[in-house]
Length: 225
View (cartoon, one colour):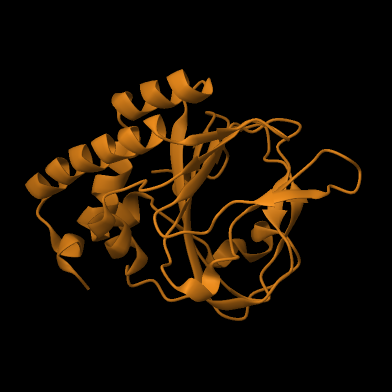
């Protein structure tokens, strides 16, 4: 466990501002891809030390998972940056405070058009292994914004980015987002934002954050930051 896991509350506030400024800079320099739907590819999403320390959080990768193409099949084993984990880890508190800030919300709205003023932050900590896969899908309407930040720096995972599909009935693969340490993918959920993770071997642990802003009607309030 490294230093950022045990920082003081005062240092946590300073770290939040550093995360905020780093992400805003990354978003300004993101590569925008128009087809098959508008999405953004990020590099250096967070300060490197933050990304490394998030990757080394002491959450064990779940075992005995059901791999049927849907994350919800393993709901009991999913990890969120909720109030419990914010209290346990000042690093998580700093991260959620940054992404709950007005500055990041305003920047995301300006760059992507997502309406986030009254949305709630939801962050999932994912550790995918073995035969994990996700069927092509679009996010449910209550999700107003989706971002993934990739946390593993293992070269064996270089082909493990999120797959982007078209809207044809067969959902043909258009491209795979680069899986690079501290890189990421953004899109605003809509009827055409088909994405997933096709079947392929995962050599190691595919760590990532899924960051959503969701509407007030989100049912599982305990998941929220």
